[in-house]
Image (cartoon, rainbow, N blue to C red; front, top):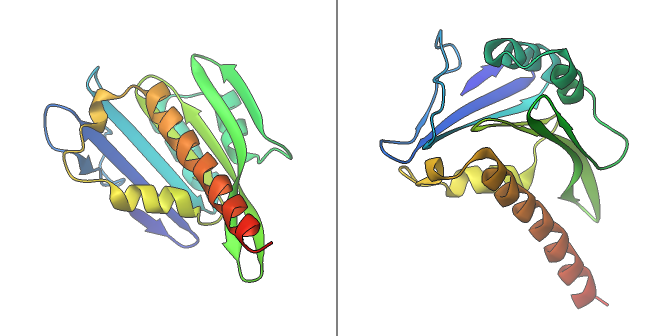
Length: 167
């Protein structure tokens, strides 16, 4: 995990044949995931400097950088340069109400990047539940994206259930 003023970056490397591990961001080179590996990079906080570095280190290009740096006003799904781009609002429970945090996700060749300015509870909970040697390396980026989207939808179902229980 890299922590800089106003920003946290996690790089998690899942390997179906070896040990899953967190990759120190200061490491000069990121591993290139193979068929049975998956790299998840999560950026939280002041995103622009971190996103610029992620894009440069992964050779993603300006269109993907612009997408990651700019929250969209509404949910969106796009496809660019062999990557799936998803913009959504992550539901966050606040005292006496619900709020949301803009979340951008890019899924490419065994790499998934999540970017958000504020904490996203379902991502934090999911990362906390991951076991070492989770076998997530067996998933490709599209399947991992589906897992994240499923977790995202669960937060809305839980919120609706709580609202229905109170009425």
